[in-house]
Length: 93
Image (cartoon, rainbow, N blue to C red; front, side, top):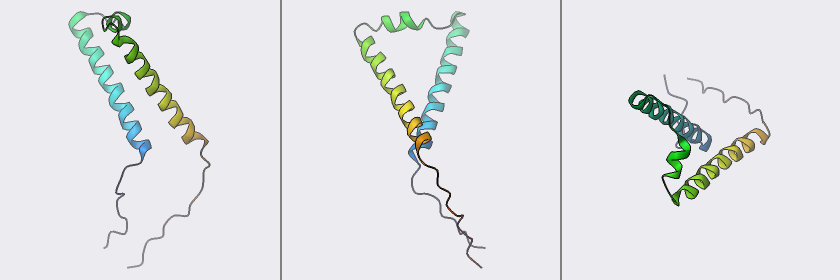
């Protein structure tokens, strides 16, 4: 039997974005749990950011930019008109 479906050559941007969000969330969760295992308390995010000094503002702007980008991509995806395309029929053998 022939394989009538060819794999996509590139991943859609939406999939890559969701993988990035999943990796970010998982790494934050693992990092927080490791910190709590060692110190017994969760991160104090404010004191950690203040310890960066003047780089603090750049980090905050970078994170805000990432959130704005995530919301913009999500909004664009929700506002895109939905079209129903007919399923591709299988080729006869």
